[in-house]
Length: 353
Image (cartoon, rainbow, N blue to C red; front, side):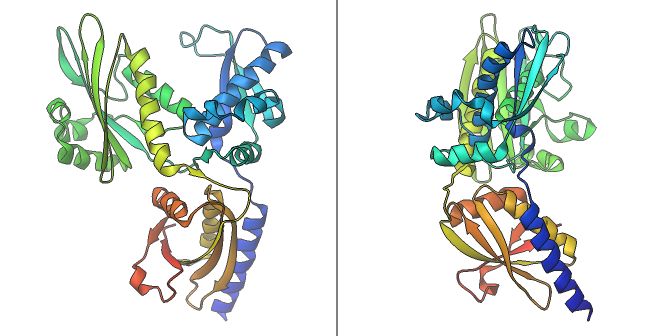
């Protein structure tokens, strides 16, 4: 009797959740523009700048501005605006008296990206932890932490926020100091830095070495994600030049892997079995999570098994490969042994509440 009640509850809650779910992507769909007045004319101009910011964040690449269809949407940017507000910037961080914050409609932005054949990068994005050594004349080399007094942390974090990239620096407390050193960074001691990064549960690590001389900054960077590595050498008169270029390189690289081109029509209906559903709340969270993924057009429950495992039909706007790639970032679903799956076309995952 208890099993019957639980099955019925799961079906009801999942149906309600899937049907009523609205797409909410947080700050990815918000643009911020400094303005001198609160006049309508200046706001109308700023709306276009804010939409450019949002399109770059949501698509994952600054190349979206070169899309031939993008200029046509700029003239009607206000139709995608949901709300706006003015705030006063923190003293010293901006010379303009106001910041105009504009929230755009996620559904409308995603629809435009589909119509333009552009990529969409979902909310689940890899967290990047940066180990950075900084050397300047007359000063010993130091590890850059979240509390470092120079401008490196602030500039990196500001540019990462503009691109929708989760980015953190180590706190460099006693635990970090005993596990990672400046020499580990300059020597690119990958095993040690990976081990030290475990406490931060990051998906990727960035290793950077910045050297300052009398004329410019010279820097070397290595990004590690799983078994893949990327390298960049960047120089400039200051971090104001290096930080935007570095974050752009990182974000464009990650988006090339995780952002997907979706269509307005369903490309594939994929069966999926999920184990570990012990309560109706698990099913509600599962359907909510799956519905947020960019490749997913619809989630439908097709069967509740006796052991309360759930079988779903996932309607995809993109390829099955892009869906599996999206799942790998969220860490909410763990792939099971394919040999345990009696249906060759069904993927089997375990839910991690």
